[in-house]
Image (cartoon, rainbow over all chains, first blue to last red; front, side, top):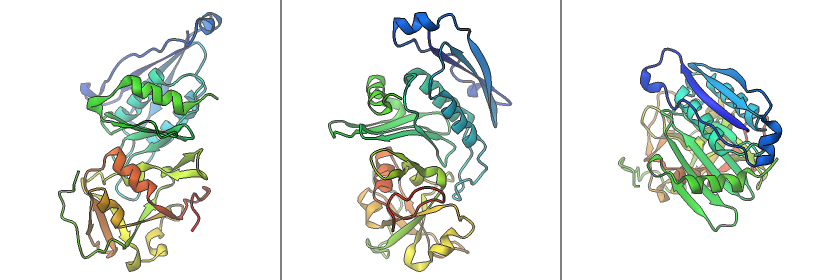
Length: 180
Length: 133
């Protein structure tokens, strides 16, 4: 089985900052499941400026994993006013929700998104490819919003955190994240 | 959604507004010239005010980028945010009299339209220009 589990471990944070505790994504097919199921589970601690996330990889690591972790870690070290407009550093909540989301939605062999900081302390993941443009943002509180426009012009939508359509979101990710 | 802040009619629609571009907002784009401006470049300010811009004809590129040499510079006409329900208002600062703000709630689609409607005057340092001036 290929899976990632993310567990937040927040330092000096109120209880409300401790978010979802576990998320596991199943393997794409049975063959992969059999081949890699003997591998040991690897766990490591992913340190951010204001907390840490325990990451657990069961089976083959997704090809995008380390690129994303490197990007998020880089953004978590941005200083106050990093954008010259009073921008705030990436919050733990935004980083955790983004990683949790990718663990649940992004296939292992996907092209990783660009990871872009928001002035509010949030983070946005975006793909701009021939298949379409997809942006998935997590604000400083970890609230998700997203927008998609297909390259063919047949689909366009925008979702707020109150109206997330998981199927549409997953479909858009499959269209733009391609295969490595 | 229309801005709650009154628009400043003394700023003509044709006025060019400049926005400094942090290198983090210059992202990969497979379908264009390799890079594009992220919609995150048009987030409102964390203090609750709008998106800071400069009135181009009242300042210089060098003045806007002084101290931010690795930044890029994007240009958009005042008409663009207005067409998206935003207001353009002068907010002169002591050291930046040409300062203005684009006020109004910015959904994904508004931020995307603002980013897409920009001309890149200067790409962030070390990045290939999307739209050379």
